[in-house]
Length: 145
Length: 78
Image (cartoon, rainbow over the protein chains, first blue to last red):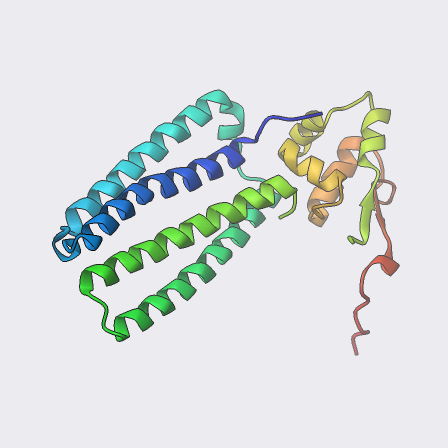
């Protein structure tokens, strides 16, 4: 029998797709500015803060929507397998983050432009968060922890 | 291959065709976790195993079986 997706899995999908979607738009805009030679003047902080605010709004709205569809699941505390999935996915995300930060440090040492370095670090954070969400989704899909 | 197997599915049906969701509610877990335990994809903690056995009204060893040959044996502690 096919069962509907659990609330926890829905929230993992929301985190993954909203993160990739919103930051995808940001990095696309930055990439275009950079390719046209205006990357240094892209205005780092305003677009970054706007992206974070938009992402927070999108995630809050979608999470509220998912919770409204299954309110009892949303109120239920995490069980032992879900806590284990969260711990394992956080570890996977941290490993991705560590690896990315190391690569970014190498790039900075090689002398890349400050605007590019800042965006590289932001991309590393996004990759870490995406890794965490992908790990959670895989664990929920496969049934394992 | 997990060394821990179980007959939760059979016991659920023998106890009034209890659904995974009903069992999950009785033991404070999600239906997905009960399904994962049934399929041998997730080994529950000892406390959860006792709660499952209690909900099914069976002793622990009736619900869960340990097959030592199915997993690598640890060297004896000295």
